[in-house]
Amino acid sequence: MVQAVVRDQPTLLAGLLAMGGDPDAPLFAAGGSLFEAALMENRPQCARVLLRFGHSPARCEEASARALLAASKSGNVQCLELVVGEAGVDARQHGYFALAKATAEGRTEVVEALLRAGAAWCGGDPFKRVALLLAAAESECEAVAAEVVRLGGSGALPQGPQGWQCLQRAARAGKAGLELLLRQAMGGATEAAPAEAS
Image (cartoon, rainbow, N blue to C red; front, side, top):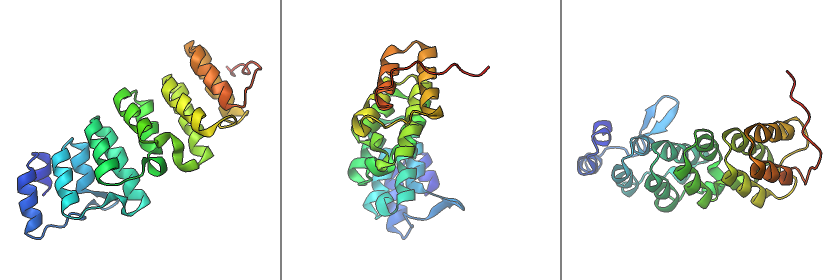
């Protein structure tokens, strides 16, 4: 079945599954699935076949997060839409890591698709929002920062070392818009960021 996915042969994959192949068989000792491999290999038709034969990445939190990450690694927005739409994975709850990784790697189309799916909500976890704002500051991604601020409001970023670190990164990059967004996330902080230690 792995070779059918790697070679992008959805008809062969369907035949193997119809003969009793397990769509949920783990690929690795640490987890991972054929569905995730299909997504990482950018094989959306093979992923659809696995869904049709009963694979469900939405069955647990870990599988949901891994499916979104695999789809984002493919760089194919169609793979992300398949995971969120057809597979029923809730990006608002499970898309944080995929969004943080895509943001850090500067994959704009993937970031935009994850933002549309609501991944910046971070499952409502304020610590994940801080980490996402750090990734946005590091990669100079105003779109992610704007969405986190919109969803988390004022105070989404603490006025402490992490908050100031974000502001320093934005200031170093000369990104005034990003710096303004980060100040809003810090509850409207108006003072200058402390100087970085040398």
